[in-house]
Image (cartoon, rainbow, N blue to C red; front, top):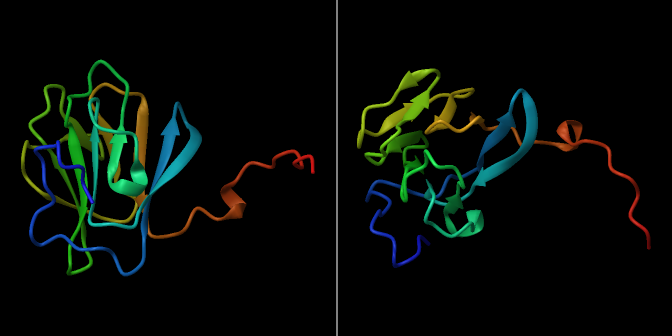
Length: 140
């Protein structure tokens, strides 16, 4: 559920995906993790709680608006992105997105918020152990 103090709300046609979608995060060509879209929407912004499991992702960058953009899943099974009228915009596959227009995202679509160097690529494939970097065994 999106937090009550935020004025953006997922649209009425949004729904939880039957299988999660993922946003793979890259910075300067290196993978830095992923976000799971398992609820109706993920809201990105500079002044939102950093609680992806509750639908909000905080981006600490000067070019990010308080409520910058959202990725929304529809009950028909499609995934959409919307720029919420942000000052520095959102790019989809290198093209600036129009403000407040829900745009369908295809597998492999890449989003960049503002002038951030991080990119977010949509996939239905779970970021499996194959993509994970080997870690030292935990001391037990």
